[in-house]
Length: 168
Image: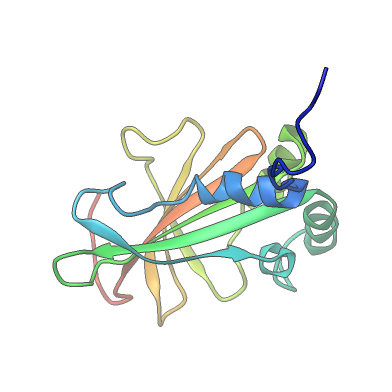
């Protein structure tokens, strides 16, 4: 049996890194995912963007785990179409295994140095096991919903003004 003539164009091979990147690209917000919002920007992230900040709890263990298990990350920013405000950041991080993602998820349950966090009740409809919090560094603030599913850790961040007050 023949597999085609030599002049038949062959589909390009996609390597494992590109497949991983394509997966996380499909996980972040895009135009039309939220009514009235359009994509402002998106982009692939590098391993160095995923490493914990020096001084973080469990820094050495977390850095070693992320370095050994990270496959791909992507982020996007969608904005309200009407006025270009109300930015929402989404981010997805793919790891080699469910076990690695679960361990990294446990180790990253802390505030980065200089960030204050107020944990809040998880909103209705959020993924099971998600974490929801208001966080601020005094200059920037917002609400972050984080969750883990299988080998993926993801979050959505909605910006707010640091001086604003809110109620449950």
